[in-house]
Structures are given as C-alpha cells and as structure tokens.
Length: 252
Image (cartoon, rainbow, N blue to C red; front, top):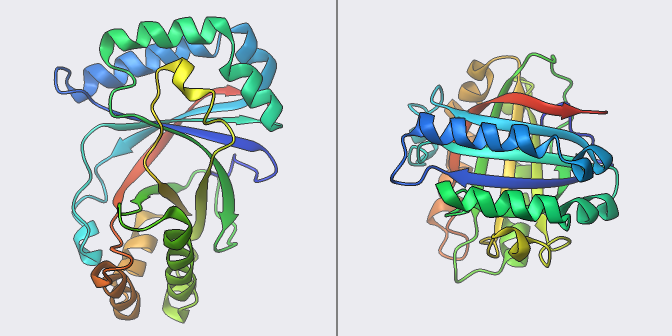
C-alpha cells in the first residue's frame, strides 16, 4: 500500500485500460486531463482527502515469469481516492457535476474495460519503508467457478505462508491486500461503470525493486505460488506490475 494511504480512511480504486483505438500515451494523457478536471470539482474538494494516479511501468515485466505469471496488459492506469468516511465517498460519487464529467469520459472510452471498486485494506507485513520507494501492484481475479469469499480464504492463507518465510522477511517488503467490498456498488452505474469482476488487489512497497525480485527468486515462495496456480479450486493468477505515483490532490 502506498505509504500515503492510511487504513482508517475509506478507499476506492478505478482501474482503466487503454482502448484499442488509442496508443498508451494518448490514453494516459486523456485520463490525466480528466483527473485534472476531477480534482477541481466542488464535491471533490469538499470530500476527498487524497487523489492519486498510478501509472504502470515495465520494470518488472521480465521478472513475473519467476512466479509463472504472464506479463501484464499494457497501459493499466489506476485512480485511487481516499475519503475520511464512506459517507464522504458516496456524496462525492453522487455529485451531478461528476456524473457529467464521467459522461464526457465516454468519448474516449474511459469506462470501457474499467474496474471500479471500494476496498478494505489489510496489512500483510508491517515493515517501514522510505517515502521515495519502489511500488508494485497485482490484480488477482477470482476464477468464475470460485466465490470471492472462498477465493479470499485461499488467497490470504497462501500470502501468509509466503510472507512467513525467513528468506522473504529479510527483504523487508511491505505487502498489503486491498479487499473488495460493495459499499459503493449502487453508485457506480451512474458513472458509467458496470459491476467489477471479483478480485483482490495486492500492493507492495520496498526500497528497491531488487528486494521484491529477490522474494520471487526464493524457491519456497515459488513452490507455494506454483501450488496455488495448479490448485483447481484456487487457480491463482495475477496481473502484476511496478507503478509510479502522481498525486493530484492531497489534504491529508
């Protein structure tokens, strides 16, 4: 979890994917321009504590194969927003100006293939890392034949086993799980979003990407992950990438 995201606040994540008619750079520019307008809305200034954009980077793509994961899709852009309470988030999401801004986003397929969800954040390790740190995100989607509840149990059991390994602990990587909830699901259709696929978001922070690559090279961790991938009742799969943070609003 980015160090700027305290767990006692309410969080929502909006994951956007580049549409086929735009280049990655064109889409990034359009989403960032949209966010620049978003943070100027009165309802946003009133209710939002922090708004960030997470831009996908390619620096880990060549290493995800260590865990038997495929390289991520290009141009995944994440907008993360924090409020002090759920009520603040819902007031912002139901604002008419925001709804109009989202309607304009349809012109460049802003919502196509997007996932919008609110989350509960669970710390999996508790290391303190520097402010200027390397960051990683992983999107774990539950397979269709497994409920999110059952998937969550297996996911946390697997993660807890991985992070209890001494060789993993020594690399001092801070891991968090962002667990999907339904607190804002009724607000999202007004903004042009469909219900998201069941998923858990994983984030990691470390001094250097070398720390997390060293984790992935650990044979015992690889064995645990590969076992979860091959388990037909789990089918662990992840879209995993490094990202950089651009802060658009900060009233923390």
